[in-house]
Length: 239
Image 1 (cartoon, rainbow, N blue to C red):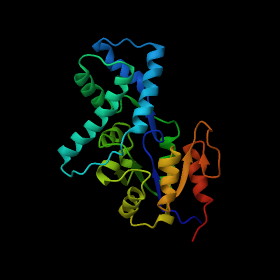
Image 2 (image 1 turned 90 degrees about the vertical axis):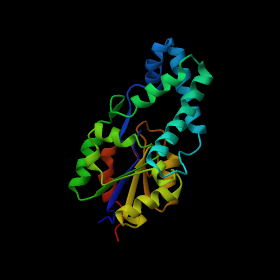
Image 3 (image 1 turned 180 degrees about the vertical axis):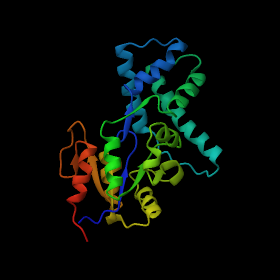
Image 4 (image 1 turned 30 degrees about the vertical axis):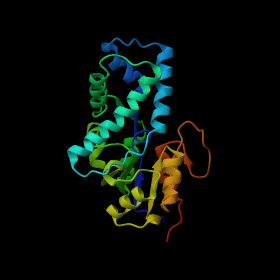
């Protein structure tokens, strides 16, 4: 029998994804500001977003007041989105535009569950596992989870801005483990990032599973769908 008691998941890119692409959403909100979407611009925005997101500092803020924290999160994202349009073409009214697009991602409208998400979570719950999220998402995650019908399925949600630690740093994993009062070898973490999820979990001595739906990173710790999680856990060594 496996010794696993808790299964942690990354959030965006693992349990749910942006409908269409980030560029599709960004440009749909930019249209009232005179920005016309074209295939080349859509491609450029997607590429600029990936670069800006990759180059951004970890979303960790030295504040505890909820209002100040949300403001820090907003400013962090403002820099990313501003960086995107600085690269592809800035337009008048950007501040108003950003307010609209930032708030748009706070609800479920622009997110969609992967087809295997709900069945996997319900199956794991029925088997007696505790479930948690470990994510570098901001506090908007709570309303997204609620809107997608996921909030009640998770026992804990650990996010970087509240934990003051971001994946792949071990501290965010350790804080999540503490919330369940379990040791690292009693948990598994599932996520779609080699660096943040697989390597981050390993650094915290947590067993990691890399969700690789496209088959880009084959290996012994890779799964192609969430429906493989239960079987992988069952195959792990016990005490």
